[in-house]
Length: 139
Image (cartoon, rainbow, N blue to C red):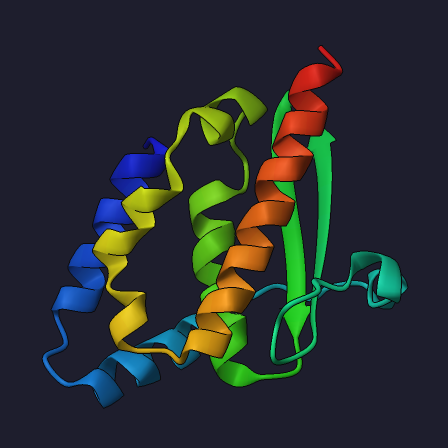
């Protein structure tokens, strides 16, 4: 499944809920799927600047694919991070770089979360794309 298809799938899941609070609850539930981030990555080096909550994002490459692991101290943010990991992890750097972030607008997150949280997502996306660019340039 491509990044665009994954985004569409998540958008469809969010459309199942009419009420904003139900969508909010869904995002919190998604956050419960977020894997454990090793304590060694919960440092300033991996902290995502620009987020209202503390967010740590660890990125690595393995066998030609880019992977992301993360954690946060806020439940809603864990859900937002898990959505981004679901979309972007285990992809090639090239696929990430060829995907326009404006596709994420179809998720309708701006209707659900505060502008501060939106800034946090933008900061995470910046880190994701920056790492993908770094990996892509190494080839």
